[in-house]
Every structure is written in structure tokens, then in C-alpha cells.
Amino acid sequence: MATAKTQLTEAALTVLKRPLVTEKTTQIAEGGNWLVFEVEKTATKPQIRSAVENLYGVNVTQVNTLISKGKTKGFGARAGRRSDVKKALVKLKDGQSVDLMAGVK
Image 1 (tube, helix red, strand yellow):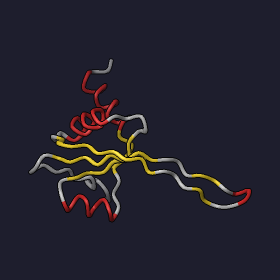
Image 2: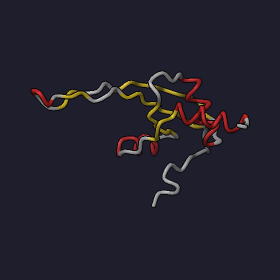
Image 3: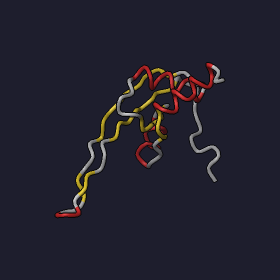
Image 4: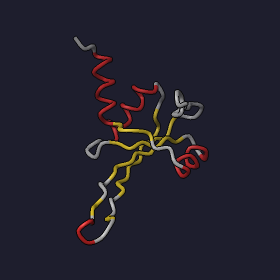
């Protein structure tokens, strides 16, 4: 039988797909107290806020979202299209941080 804590974690994991760690997101994180995640396209800002707070145990002060449109690659019969991606920029309360690279070898 699943507990309430397990259900919250499962719901949070369905909202947050993965953290985005690139040069640009690292610069954003260093400039302020921001984290960047790839999220489900149907996720709302309150769902994203609660997912980050439940998974990482931090306080979220602001959530901004954007949808990166997929681009067409190739040409002719080989042409394809990348999927659209929804990203969430999450600002943490001052003095709090999350190490997204913990456990990476």
C-alpha cells in the first residue's frame, strides 16, 4: 500500500522530467538562486512549485515557464521534427541551494 509521501513523490516525478544542466543554465544558476528543469507540457506553475519543494525540501519563491519549439531537421524523405519542450525556471529562497550533480560519477 502506497503512503501519502510516496504518492507525492510519484506525482512530483511525473511533473519534473529532468534537470537541465547546460552552460547557459549554469550561468543562470550562478547569477541568482535559479534551477532549470524540463517539465511535462501540461504541468502548471503550482504543480511545478510543489514538485520541487517536495523532492528537494526547499522553498520556491518564483516559477517561470517557457515552451521551446521543436525544429525541423533533415530534408526530403529524411525530414523529421524535434518535439516541443517545456522548461521551468525555478527561483529558490535566498540561502537555499540544491546540488543537481550529487551522485554523478
